View: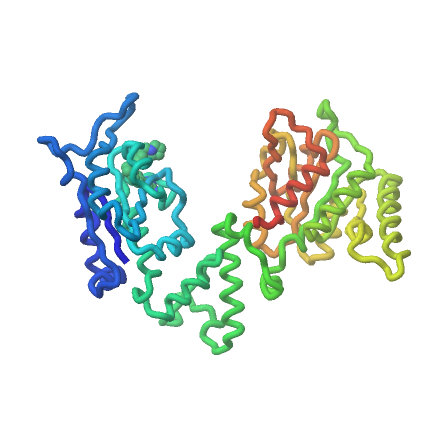
Length: 435
Ligand code: JFH
């Protein structure tokens, strides 16, 4: 495979191939790397490659003519296959392992590097096939990006690495972070290598590695973790978060429109719809909280009716609304619910409040659902999510609340989502899988 780097700083590229895997591949002739300098294609006395930007602004822009001539010099216009021309740019599409695999199928890559504040846009239109960014930070030019692309792509070229490692490459590019690695000595000061790795139990080692891989991904990469679809075996390693998450609809203490602490009435719609959402996302329980006894009785009655609906079928129906309503529990206060959850899981829940009002619960740490999901996945504790009714949860709950979820924002200034809709959106952000 052939790489041509178009750069006014070839001295930044050349020495990189003196060593390492890429250096050896170049020596062996598996890959070739050449540089072309746009300065060699200037026609003026000063050999200038930059000029001031039209419209003003800081710095300089690379002139189009020397760059276009340099790119054109790489291969004749009718060459087959035509070289694939890439511009390294902070505004390109992100470079990924997937993209590296795709580029490794090409015979010839031309990597065009700008300097200064970038290049004249018309060069992109005339002579670039795609723009790639190696990450969201600003480099001083495209050269280090070109080196990154050459390194990642070369490893995938047959013959550059040994056979065993290239098969390995596949298994590591499946959207999870790698497990931690250790070598001798088994004891380094206070730090021991995890004992499971010293034994010969290969199934135990595989399970340990998988568990650490899942934990690391949750901790460092919530974006990848959101795409994680656990297998049955994975579920034995990491208790799914949803299965230890409870949601509670709080009717007291909540506020009215004036800020006064009140008790709201339960609605059939809230009982029913949030129960269905809770079952859909695999929650452990749905708690209806009100100090009013007749209201709790009403909820229990409704839940009982739906459960009965399942039972009167022959054979008894499962997967119906009755299953959802079976998640329902009632309580006279949040403390009673916390006690019930503590009893069931053997450990107290992390209490998470939600509010549509950005200014409420200033003392609690406000988190995105993704951050909460990452944090909670690693801790063994159950979670209790409090949903307020009326005008929202009363601030008097603050002492018991350890986390606060950022309000769900629509795209208008008018925010009047029903608590049922807010609950569904929140559950999807916490537990929904990104396809
Ligand atoms: C490059 C440079 C642009 C101005 C963000 C807002 C304003 C400095 C050529 C690639 C990645 C690069 C990269 C690639 C090529 C060039 C420097 C460009 C601005 C920055 C300032 C010149 C940088 N992934 N990061 N950086 N520069 N922009």
